[in-house]
Every structure is written in structure tokens, then in C-alpha cells.
Image 1 (tube, rainbow, N blue to C red):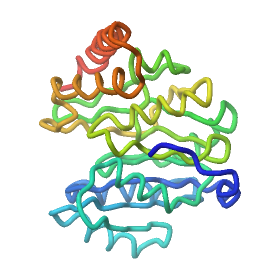
Image 2 (image 1 turned 90 degrees about the horizontal axis):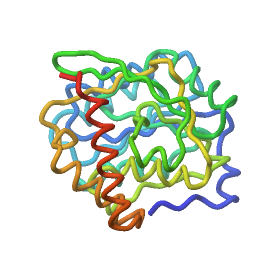
Image 3 (image 1 turned 180 degrees about the horizontal axis):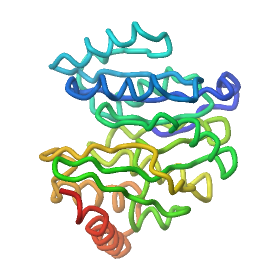
Image 4 (image 1 turned 135 degrees about the vertical axis):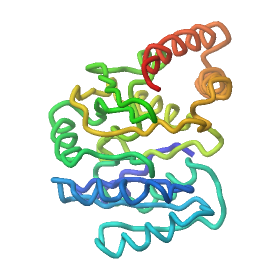
Amino acid sequence: MNSALSNQESEAFESGLVSIITPLYNSEKYIEDTIRSVLVQTYARWEMIITDDGSTDGGFAKAQALALEDPRIIVQKLERNGGSAKARNAGLKRARGQYIAFLDADDLYRPDFLEKQVAFLRVKGPFVFASYERLAPNSTTPFIVRERIDYAGLLRGCDIAPVTALYDAIALGKRYFREDLAKREDFSYFLDLLKITPYAFGNPECLATYRVVVGSKSRNKVKVVKHIWYVFYGVEKLGLWKSVLCILQWAWYGYKKYRNVR
């Protein structure tokens, strides 16, 4: 499921409102810091939609308690674990904002993230992202993104971290994630957006923090290659040799991107 909403539905979007989509799964350790990074935003027109994906820790209860502090925080729970794409889609279905943003339950916004990214989008175009810090157990390193990226450029290497992405749903339609992808559904999502707008524009300023969790599935290189290959070959239908070329380019770009992250 990755279609846009109809024009009739888009008229219901609230102009200027940012809908922040947060999937929550066993992130009790981090969710309070994540929510508080939203509460201190200098841009006040936001809603945060947190969807618990069958957590077995206390993260859901903690999110519910924090939601009592501000009515702009909405917390809901899926009946059973369905994966991050399903949780994000559940949040997207409730989103009312003109602007769509993504904040995973262990990542952080800088206090001026929304203010600066909304202003940046209004100047540059309907799909933007930003530079960010990688917070790892033994290092904190910046990643400075490219000035702009198109569909072909994203195939060669992904600069767009979900925590920094923002797009205009009135201009591009509200998009949904593919629920058949176990991993890298965000990469596929951004490729879809770049099929309907020529470029995503990168803000060089570091405006968010992406937490690098050692031992996570996203850090297992063999599994990552498998999922990326499926996006290239199975979803994008690039063909065998172009998919091989894209995998090699993506691997080299990823090596350069993370070689100093420890």
C-alpha cells in the first residue's frame, strides 16, 4: 500500500500543521527523550502520532503518561505486532497535517528542527531532508547531506534519514509505506516520492540525532544487502545488471558513510 490520497481527502489537511509519525516497539529506554525533543520545538503547530507495535516493555505506558502533558500527542496501539511499516501507516491514517515528518522512537529532534525544515521546504520544494548526527556507543559524528538528490542519486546511496525527512502532503499526496517489505521500507518510500517530484533538497545544517544501536537488525550487513537487493530488483524492477551495479554503488557509499561510526 503506497498510493496517495484523493484530491478530496487532501482538502482536509490542516495548513501549516506538521504530523510527526512515530512507530514504537520496545523503546522504553528512549521514548521519553524522543517525545521531549518534540515538546520543546520552537515551531508549535505539530501533532505527534505514536503507534505502539505490540511492545512487550513499558514503552507504551510511558508514552501514554507523557501524552497527558500535551493534547498534541496521540498514542494508539496495534492489536498485534505488524512491523514498522504497518505502525507508520496506522499513524499516517490519522495524520491531519499539511506536512508529514518521521521520528523513530529512539531518535531526537533539535529544538528548532521543525521551524527550520518547514521554512526550508517553503523555499526549496515539497520534499526536504537535513544533515544529522550519528549517536553511537563510542562516537558522535555528523553526516552532512548532499544539496539535492533525485531518484537516480538515491539509488546510488541514501542521504535521507527518516528522522530528517519532511514533505508537503498537499503537493505530493499522503503516501503510505509498503507493508510487504520487512526492512528498508523507508528507502522504498523515498524512492516513490522521487518518482513524483524531481528532487529532494538537503539542508546542510545538523538538525537531528540518529541513534546507532549496536546489534540491531539494521546493522547486520548481510541482511541489509538482502533487503536492499529486493528493493532494487523486486520492487523497482531495475533488472539484474542494473541492480548489481546499484548494490555495489550503495555498498561503497554506505562504507564511506559509516566507516568512522563506532
